[in-house]
Length: 211
Image (cartoon, rainbow, N blue to C red; front, side):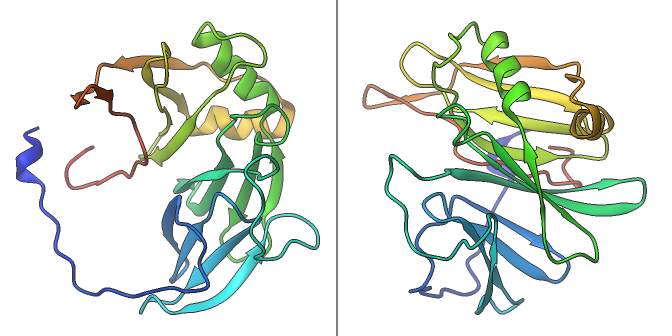
């Protein structure tokens, strides 16, 4: 597909003074959800992009900003369908073992998410990338089509940009019994700009385009 065939048009601009960062955005059940990598909540906006609520991801979480060292680094949001029901998954970057290896599953019709331990899955990602046990992952994007999840690893240093692909069904199985899904990995050599390597920052699936 020719990238030049995609266009975008800004229809509204808003300043959200109470939103600290926007590492991911997704439309789910009539609202826009924004993940900020330095807070432990998801911001909830209505269809006019006005802030209406915060959803805590941890017990007693609030919208106070967290230091870089201690933040959970929620970088990814994606909706997906499974057995005729819609879900939304928020997930950490994996850039610090345990602290940033959490996922949060939102189920259609339920307000509060289920917290998911992604430690084993992220350890397998490191294995796929030939990284050490505590070497940084840098997951920055997540998207889903009708059957697959795509986790995007941003390259840094000698680590390449890559996409991990797995079946949604296998991911649900992992949640239930910790059986590691079958994972495919594809590497991408992206452009460098003024000597700086570009990297993935987010992802979405466009059904009409098949991308």
